[in-house]
Length: 237
Length: 273
Image 1 (cartoon, rainbow over the protein chains, first blue to last red):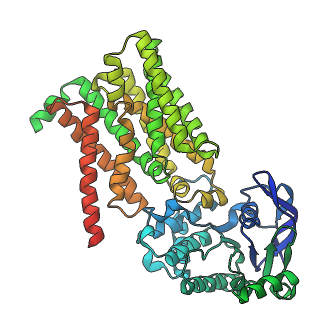
Image 2 (cartoon, each protein chain N blue to C red; image 1 turned 45 degrees about the horizontal axis):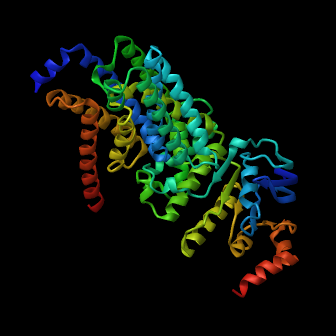
Image 3 (cartoon, rainbow over the protein chains, first blue to last red; image 1 turned 90 degrees about the horizontal axis):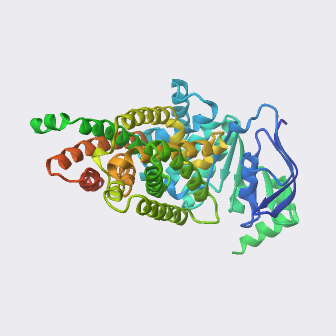
């Protein structure tokens, strides 16, 4: 087991208010970790901290050997600007290669090849010249996933990737993420609202909720009190 | 038509205006794509009003207008961007405050020094006679610098415009590029505003981008199309303004409006097809 990210006694704050503390966990190479919890429990803030966009107010987050901050692929939530953005699918995917090129101004042919490969992986090669704003929600997420794959060979962070997608497209997307994890050996960290799908797909769960913080394997989670409460409670909906 | 153009080019002041105008149209069109998509259109407008204030003060103190206005407006661009990002005052309100205050100060300075008259009119609506030889050299140098920086940072500008969070997460210095875009916009606004006028210069930033977005489907397409549209509209505008004895700035904006309407119609047809 090679640890990629280690969090020790991490506390996170938002607007100077502590929203999550005593976070201790290790993300190993090849893991599929789901971060679940109520709104405002600090899921997105934790993800920003893992990405190095925000410093934790206490504790330390260390990257394991061979992982640099710029080598993490990221699928952020979509913004209003993107929805009507005039850009071709290829332009968007290619922009994922920026992280590894430093100050060089233009893309090399290797990077263009990498972008095409990642589009092939997610089966969107035929959309190459399409305009991003004319795609369906599920197609747009595949494009952004391809972009994230261009930025990483090791680790992918996804922030609520199925928000706004219909159930069929959502489960397709879960399968794609699972494939990326299993076939390409890329470590996955995903924030999810959907606790059942999280438990179905992930092998580790981090549950944030004020004083009740749970971290462990999915099996442990299903047998824990907090896990039973959340998984069981939702079944009766 | 050819007679008209050769007659036009026999005037030195018009040749100067054409050189500076083409370069400024090019710069503003390129930067405009990013500014419009990032919802920063009002920054261009705000900067031009601050430029008006700076020019008025420079004139009152008998200083070189561009040498005063460029640093003042670049400084203002830093501040406006900082204000847009802060959560205390919302961006558009901050820009409205800054731009109206600058106009008020400019008008007071002008009326105290030379009295309201032609000066105010020229600053507000532009004058084709405004460019001296020194101005032309400075304008050409600065525009070429703006163009070069834009081309070299093109891919980063795309990333920062499309998705700032992703760009930052993968190690792009997004703050630096936001600064770069607004500083380049500030320089462009100052260079163009004496010909186009403080009230009209921001249209050079906004119109070409919006026009090409009606039709183009890729970012590169939008950028290239805006550059072409902007230069052509400027050239048609200056010919019309000469032939019909109309103010240059207003003619250029009017041509932009017509082209925008044309592209919108074409876009609607393509969309239906």
